[in-house]
Length: 168
Image 1 (cartoon, rainbow, N blue to C red):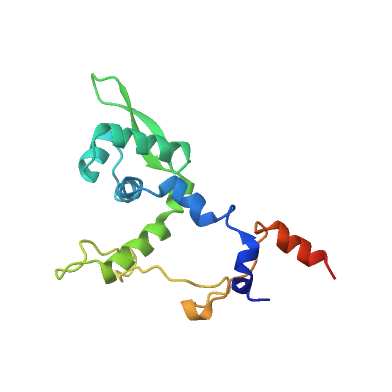
Image 2 (tube, rainbow, N blue to C red):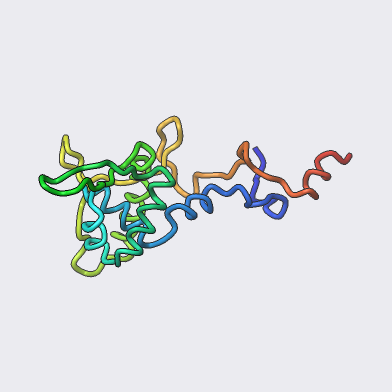
């Protein structure tokens, strides 16, 4: 395994997973709508009220998150009312939980006021606080210092790097 970072100028970030994820959830309102979806918010008006944004912004974010497959619209009907739609997390949306947990955990450590965090997520079974952790596929916890960058199958090398590989 070579140190990929020493070759950074020879690869393109055109296929960056972080950039692509930010295209989907890279706004404050998208992240807060996802937070609310995990808290059980389902109706349009409740999203707008709880996130503190207007109807046009709520509509735009919900459409984007639905189009991206994180939320899905589910019809419901109150007695005597027309059919409306609620929003619920999809499997893809539920897979976003570790991202929000890590962001909340970082905020609890570095951005919370003197009073402390507003909520604590606990394990339903034992009551212990839940934390996001990095771990390898073998289950070892990994720190920043313990990690290395390796080329993935989608790494795009610049033309100069490809030429260098075949020279010599």
